[in-house]
Length: 175
Image (tube, rainbow, N blue to C red):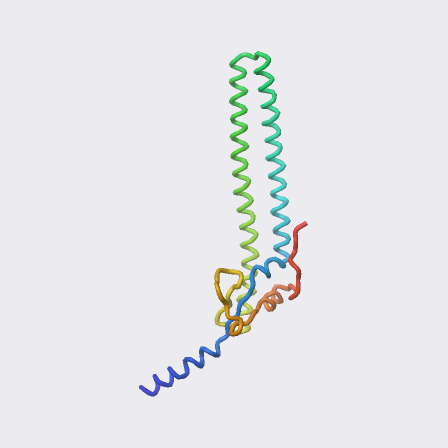
């Protein structure tokens, strides 16, 4: 029994040395993924649509505000002024609420797009990890403060290859 325990203790360090660790720069990969460029374009198009609608409501508010000021100068009856003032306040509140809704919807759309992209990246990482028999693949772009590149292999190019991206691909910029 003692001999078996001693043998296990002696072999354990050797088995640790035989294990492979890798690291990847996920930010670099994501920026060159075609899905990322498409996601940026989609979110920018959505943002433009929301901005146009927001500006339309704001223009309407400004127009009604100018009309209200003119009505005040023209001695319009108090009950009409009161009703117009309430309409202005409702429109201003609607504009504020819509502004908040825009931010929430844009964040949600961006998060959904990035979730799909991250899922595809995770699937490629899993394939590279299994094919290369890596114990662990760390993300150099993440919160890991130090990766010893002497004992860890950079598998960024392998993951890019699994995603069908050239190793020297340049980050896609949405136009």
